[in-house]
Amino acid sequence: MTRAVLILSVLVIGSCSSKKKTERELYEEMTSGFKYTTYKAASGAGIGPVVTAYNEQKPDSLAPLNSEYAHLLLGYMWTISRKPAMAFAETDLAQESDKEEVKLMAQSLRSIVMYEQGWNELAKQESDDAKKYAQGPTSKVKYEVSVFYMVMGVAKIYDKDFNGSKVFWAGFANETQIHWPYQVTDALADFQNNKVQEGLSKL
Image (cartoon, rainbow, N blue to C red):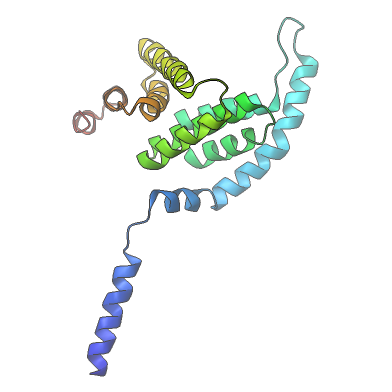
C-alpha cells in the first residue's frame, strides 16, 4: 500500500513538473532572468550619458537624439539580432518615457519580440493594448501601423535583409493576423543562411 502511494506521488509530481508553461510564464521567466536584469541596469545607466555626449559633439546639421529613441533603436537592433532578453529590456526602458508615441512604439516593439518567440496570443494582446497610447480612431491607427510595417518589410526584402524584414512582418502579423509574409520571409532567411531543409519546412 505504501509503495503504491509512493508511486502515485511520483507520477503526480512528474506530471506537474512536465506541465507546459504558458506564453505569459515564459515571458516573465525571460524578463526576470540574469541576462535581462543586468543588461537593463547597464543600459538604463549608460545610455543617458552616451546620448548627452553625442548631442554635445554632433554637427549642428543633425537633430539631437533622445534617450528613449536610442532605447527603441537598440531594441530593434537586438530583435533583428535575435537577442530577445535584451530587446525586452530596451522596450521596457523606452516605455518609461512620458511621450505617448514612444510608449506606443515601445509596446508595439515588445509585441514583435513576443511574436518572434512564437508567443502569438501574447503578442496579439500586447499589440492591442498598445492602442491605448494612440490618438484618433483605433481603425485608422491600425491601418497606418500596418502600412508602415508592410512598407518596411518589403524594403528590407529588396535589401536582401531577411532577418530585418521578419521584424516588420511580425508587427504586420500582430496588427492584421495575416501570418504568411512572416513565414515566407522566415524561410528566405534560412535559405540565405544555407539552411534549406529548415526553410522548406516553414513553407
